[in-house]
Amino acid sequence: MADVSQQIDQMVAKSQKAAEIMRGFTQEQVDKICAAMDAASVANEVKLAEMAVEE
Image 1 (cartoon, helix red, strand yellow):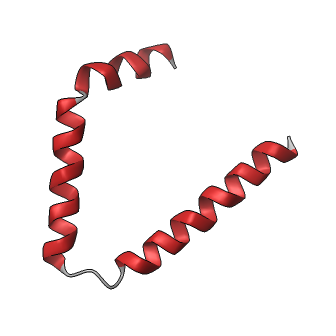
Image 2 (cartoon, rainbow, N blue to C red):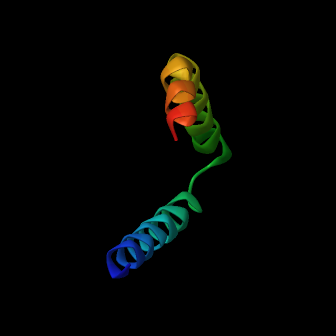
């Protein structure tokens, strides 16, 4: 259980660091990131759906 707790702590720390970096982004930069995320999800929609069903 401690291993899972450590992993969670590490993920939270990384996400907080990423959020701090992103606070300095312009709206245009955020828009580009969101567009890239959308394109990646569409390009991988079948695989993502299969993974969701397996989970």
